[in-house]
Image 1 (cartoon, helix red, strand yellow):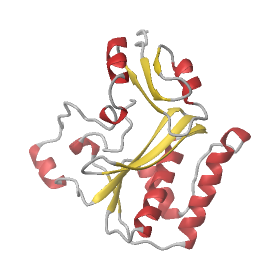
Image 2 (cartoon, rainbow, N blue to C red):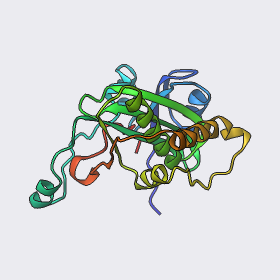
Image 3 (tube, helix red, strand yellow):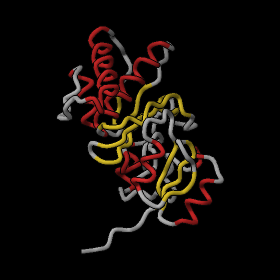
Image 4 (cartoon, rainbow, N blue to C red):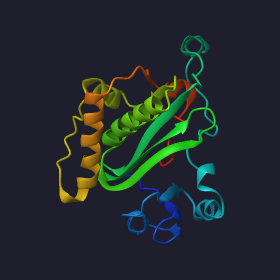
Length: 213
């Protein structure tokens, strides 16, 4: 069995900031901290360097990405529509600490972020991110489209439901309050915003990616 590679965790915003050598130590700093900023690195030096930099310079990156698709396939897919916002979620465990956000696809400027929530799943986060984006674009009367890399979340939004197997508890009460609000919004609002699958194989990670894989 291959040995699991050690990771180092940079926390820019949390109860305490710094570089932590275990996920549990990192989690203690971000739990119940609204708008926490953190990311894992493969070396201590990289994590330390990142701490002295800007969080937003280290997330949502696809450095060195090279598509394995053929030129014909890439031509057929084309380029992203930059008249759009991109949404994504990140979950450390399933279920685990989860957050989601939306960014401008072209500039990667963050438009909204929610979490971290103590207990959630990636699918719930992706679902909430899409609905959050729909509500935002409707409020602004915007003709932007929404990109997501989650087929599951697209399906849930179309069905106006959150078909999660995660059971409700005191630990995820706040999260499910958002889920209920999202479902109610879908059932009481109409929208014309197209929800489009992000072509990861052609374009790399979605711009809203948290970069914690």
